[in-house]
Length: 345
Figure (cartoon, rainbow, N blue to C red):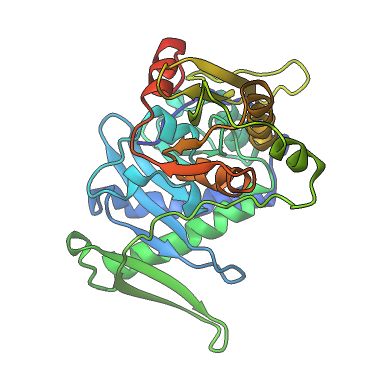
């Protein structure tokens, strides 16, 4: 499940703000309902915000190991597939690194991160030994969880406010939702009526469609690669990307991130051909640079083997335009071995 980390990478710069007070109040409303006593991690709550078409997915945390709270996935593209499986929030290291989520947890005051204590104190919250208090984090793709930024306060406050109304519709108003049969609780806004509606509906989560990159036909780089000969020694090449298991922080940018690796390897011999390590924001440049160097040094392979949808989105067009066949497979044995040897997840 989501990794409950109390190591805050960047304390919020705004204290005592009205926006944070609103967020705190939204969290307290949820605490009063204690939804973890009534819902499991596989019970999905979906909302469609007023000004957006993208759905927001939320689920309830009721784990003895992780505690009590709420997970919010604001973008389904970065929600781990394993989260959508019934009755489990266990995810791999890689799934966690590639996820984007907001978290709300409730803990005793002594268990809160120091930054959370500071924020709560700034709005006049007085700690007691018997109460539970909310603390929040925001995790983005390729980065560990961190304190919310002030810009996150109204976003998460609005999401939690709608989630609170969803909880109430079941617990206080008697709305029937057959979560066990695959139904989710949906909340949508009707602009004409200026009303929100809650209803139960069966949800089939569609497979994620990764974004694809299209190369310009008149690109000078593309023209140069087309002139490279077909490789005789390395006709079958694998590509994949992976991550360091622990985050790092550059000297200039203090924000921690997980370093990425892009690798090409010969599928038959297992030899590493080209690779780059990079910041998550630089994945496209790193992958395309490694691909160009591969072709220039070894020649154009006959077949490029890919297994990950994101990798297909990266290279399907580029490979086709240099007359390299793309083959989608379940396993990349050469790269899997290299990943294990180098501690890449």
